[in-house]
Length: 171
Image (cartoon, rainbow, N blue to C red; front, side):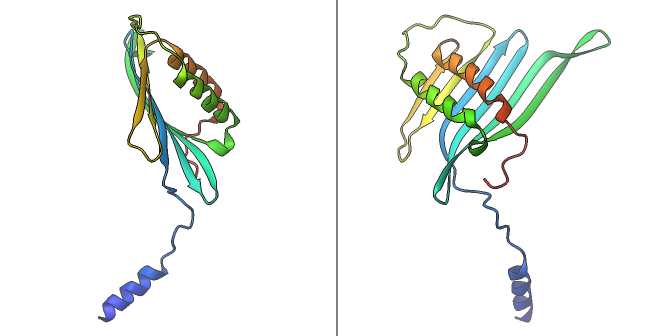
């Protein structure tokens, strides 16, 4: 019995991490890029989530990127295949361009699309999966070319300076 009391006292005395490492993120939408061509393949997933922090709501964006390139570098005058992976984050409080990107996305989601998509090679399929709060219903758009692809290309340029290799410590 004394052993249980001593162990309990030791465990209770351990410091508890006071930083909020998990604020119950609510995933709002996911962008994926899959495929490619000309011997370059990408598999990228970007998750846009909202986190409740006290009375504030903050966007947290997480990117998981993988790229395989049959000639990613050269060695001894020959192509050498490469495979790279990375994970990056955006803290919505520190990225002014994120709000503009989100506003532009709303226009893309409501843009009328033609019924036929041209066949395109050597380009990844870009998909948008939207989650509605409090519902299981989702919306999915996928294109090789079109308004979604154009928006995503522009969004990547606008968000480029916001990406960080480390997850925000307080989110």
